[in-house]
Length: 358
Image (cartoon, rainbow, N blue to C red; front, side, top):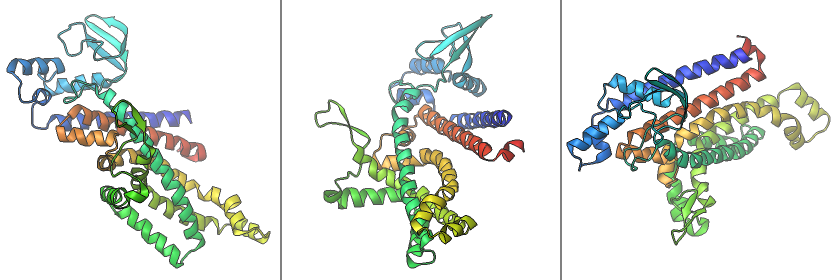
């Protein structure tokens, strides 16, 4: 099992290195001067030169690439020259010096995701730390909605196989998979937040925390979570319904279910005590993979509902060409994909030892 985990971790690190490389070169071949993006339209040539030197924009693309890898690495190499980009500044790096070799300082640090072009030099890590928890709450809520509603309707669909109700549920679940999330978000916001507002008391837009009427403190607004969680959960909901239905139908054909029926157990008792647990296995497996997709798929949903999460931050950064935030956010999402995939692979290996031996 240990070798299996180490192999998966090795592949994950190679994947992360590939993603990092693609992200860097993709965003650094775009037209435009990053220094001008940071300073705006009122810059002087002296200011441009100072910014280029400070952030390493005056170096070759290859050198900038190694600077970027050095910033992201846990163990990094730094110059003693204060004018050099790699100087171990406390403003940039949260680091501990390990040792000094000649004119190079080797340090252990947290990954440095650079600074925002548009937020007055705010660190990208700070921006992500402020918005990622909201996205995480939204993704978890969407998964919970998909599980609860999906399992319920999946059971109903299986028990009423080939009936009008079963066909209606299948049509609705297929429709849920095919409708784009941004369209569902617009539709839900308009219908439940505007047309039915006096009944639902839900807002078309709003985040988890909002300033009170006096602008003095942030207040928790859980009702703003309802619509975006429902919209984001529609696609996994449709998958859960289909998986639950098919899995339960398969389980109900097993011999031990026939034995339970012969003992006189009711359908409810059979489902609750015998069939449900085994039928949930493929559902739980699929949901674990969907969770990472929720983080990436929340981009347009958050933007439409005004949810202050990582997805909305990415859209805002795209509108203002705030490249460090875009690159940092994409890296974080990729890292979470990788971590979740490793976790799922380890679970697979634990459930089926044959996998770890291949």
